Each structure stands twice: as C-alpha cells, then as structure tokens.
Image (tube, rainbow, N blue to C red; front, side, top):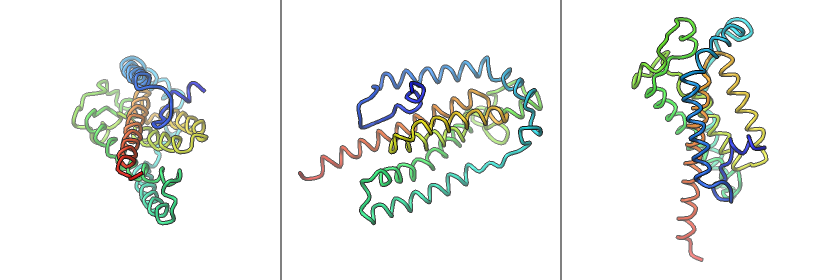
Length: 228
C-alpha cells in the first residue's frame, strides 16, 4: 500500500500529501538514481549479463515499438476526446482521461527525445560488449548508442499510468505492478541500467503531475468565468 502511494500519490484535486512531501519523494528518487549511476549500474549490468546474456533466455533483440505505441494511442485518444464531447460525456472519467493522454503522450515522447540527446549516456549493451567505461561522455550528443538515459519506455508508461490511475483510482495497484514489471524487464534484458529506469519514472511522474496541475488550474479559471 505505502509503495503504491509512493508511486501514485498524485490526486491533484483531492486531499493528500502536500507539495513538500511530493518534492521529498522526488528528491529521494533522484538521489537514488544518482547513487545507482555512480556505484550500482555497472556491476549490476555485468552480473545480469553473466546470468542472463542476450541470445539465451533474453532475446538478442526486441523491436522498439514505443513510437508506434505513442502515435497509435495518441490518435485513438484524440478520436475518443471528440466522441466524448459529441455525445455529452465530456465530464466523465473517460472525457477527462482522453485529452490528458492525447496531449501527454506526444509531450512525453518529446521530453524523452530531448532528455536522451541532452544526457547522451552509453547504452547498456554497448557498455557490456565494448567495455565502454565512460557513461555520460556525450552531453548534448545523445544519438545512436548514446541514448540510454532516461528510459523512454519507463517515462512514457509512467505518465500514461499515472494519468490513468488518477482518473480510475482502482487501477492504481495494477499500474504499480505494470511499472515494476516493465522496469525489471528493461534491466534484466540489459536494455537499461537501473538508474535509467528510476530516472524514467521521475521524468514521467513529474510530467504527469505538471499536466494534472495544469488541468486543475484550467478548471479553476473556467469555473471563475462561468456565470453562476
């Protein structure tokens, strides 16, 4: 229960942990990512590669369908957004979720791309195959094999599931499990370091919180302008 609240304590329009508590969680997560990048990532990656080398239990390559997922779901959410308003369901949970995801998904993909370019971290499999000792040596040049940080899959899915569980709170525990499984899969398949995954969660969570606060502000402005 407490772990789920740590991942998904984000009800913007209801009572809950204040900004200070939220900031402390994010600070701890950011410090944990930094500590992992300095002391944990490389030995953990070598250990996983020894026990689960790509080409054995772990596939040699896995198709990266993140862009397809974002594009397809974004288009679907735009159509759903139009449908909810055309049928008078704009104030429903679905009517609230569809614009959040229609805007949030492409936004998260853009944040992912810019972040990877900015940090330019060596990908885990390149580090393992070439013993590339310098992780963050390509600042502002994150292209090709230097796009590990943060995990784009974790960033996009965190935003998606945070927004989903805000509109449908009963799905919060399922969303937590999904993020844990995704994070474990990315690490055990040697596609990401542990800190990449933690940072992906932080980026996705912050972006989702920004969107929820923007939504609340928009509702407040609309309410003030609406005649009584």
